[in-house]
Length: 194
Image (cartoon, rainbow, N blue to C red):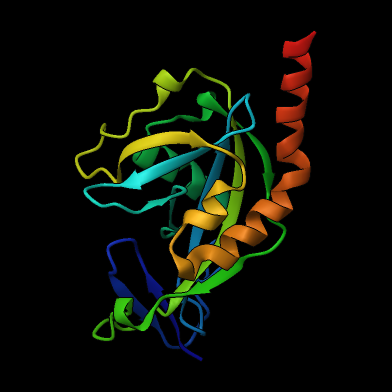
């Protein structure tokens, strides 16, 4: 059995005789899915962090691929800092998805010239509570920013707005996180009324 490993830069290595896995998950599994994490950040108002991809008109949650030797949680913290400029002290982990969720890339986005061919992502998602002011967010701190703008949107808004091939995963993630995410909003509203 061959298992292929691909880093964030699509550097490829083949293992012919042993199963190379990182933290229990091949970086690209035998079915062609790349290990990845997704991040939902919620604020005190029950809104979620929604970011615009650099130089584009598409918006999404932060996400990124698992690198060699990383656990999903380590990847999440690395991507959180690289893409959003937030450090572990700026957030609190509230929940993570029970299972890895998959989506396929549209055929036009599959790089057939790379080996192995990556047909999609399998993602572990994290729900984070922002514990710092919005000013802690710094989208442009890296030399290769992923995002150039962000806003806080209502909890279910991203499910309707994300590109179609990610929509079902977003729906599953938001539904799984709703029991723990939405109480932040209800609790905060009761506090403001009192």
